[in-house]
Length: 221
Ligand SMILES: [Zn+2]
Image (cartoon, rainbow, N blue to C red; front, side, top):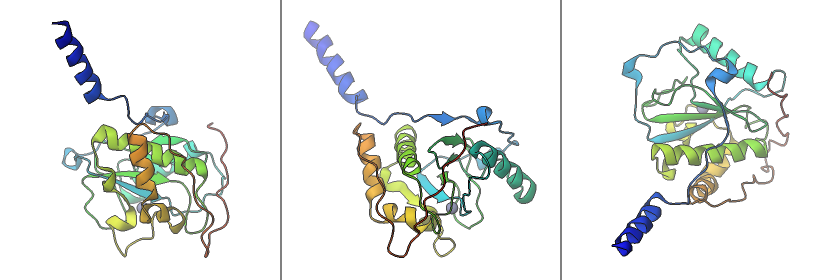
């Protein structure tokens, strides 16, 4: 009798598993003052991909990241008729993660690809012209691992925007895309999913640049 109970307890421990990715800190939509518009039910989806982006706009640290997120939401609603941010998460140069669109809805985009199934993770900055910060790379890996775990997405389904929309964009920029291209990013994600603590560190500047690091940002509000 006792042996059965102990056996079942061990099985339960083994299947629930100690090893797992930890949830990173996230600035929730209500905290940064989000004003989303309603999204049609036809836009609900089941996530299969984590698609990584850069903003494609130089980050010059002229405003705080929370103001940047509010401005992007308002611009999209006004100019693009997007009900909410086009991305599900946005990562500031200081590594803070901001919640965007609810995960249950497909994202929005300026390019043409099958939107359903994508979770969009954006990093502020233009990684064709400036270098992602170490904190951004680390937050992006930790967030991606946690999303893979919670949404049951295979780490091999982590890709860049340009993989989803070939010949339409250079997003997420060459100084981040290289970690997707050489498999390093997915390797970090896999190790985080196994409960390990990989050293998440970007490489040296690419031979053809960029060389300028992204400037750090002012604290929230
Ligand atoms: Zn993109």
